[in-house]
Length: 117
Length: 113
Image (cartoon, rainbow over all chains, first blue to last red; front, side, top):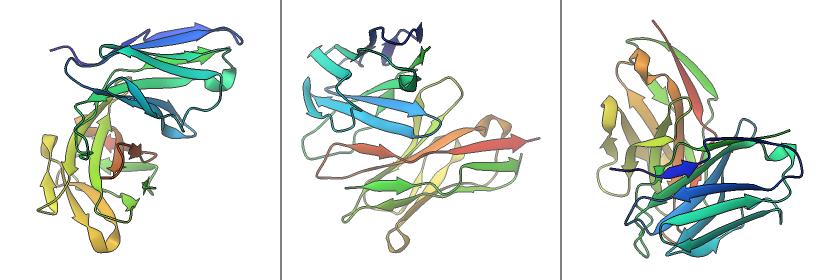
């Protein structure tokens, strides 16, 4: 069975460039999360979607970050323009969401390691 | 809002020794609690979870955790650690009135032969 698929696995870019990270959730899952992991701040929740609708984006650092989920099988996280402090591992995770029950297991992708020079 | 604290950044144990990783949470009602493990270069994998009922929950790989409401804790334990358990461990808390899942900062476990 395919798990959560993220691409690219590694990205090295220069400051000011646009970065797009992609995520394909597990088929049948209707809730998708984007997390950022750094040594200093650990795992930070950036944004999550239920049924393709953004529910809470309060963790998005600033306007340079944007996320979309045009359909149930695809999501993107875009950084424009990128800065060195954006260097981190970005994880996408999905789960089956039932309204009023925050109990579903999150399944994580292997992450996208971003380095901004 | 819910939050979770893992007081130990790094723990080192000998293979065969027992293990306890600490997790404290903050939330007004009964939380949903999880432990995840992350191997180097990998995503996170669920070890176990607590929603209600028996406060001692069993997970994969021989791990267990105990929910103690009076102490706001959900510590992870294993009676005998194997070298393959070396990884980073994350405690996470969810709440019934929100879909957020908030993670602690993690505890890195090192196992010596």
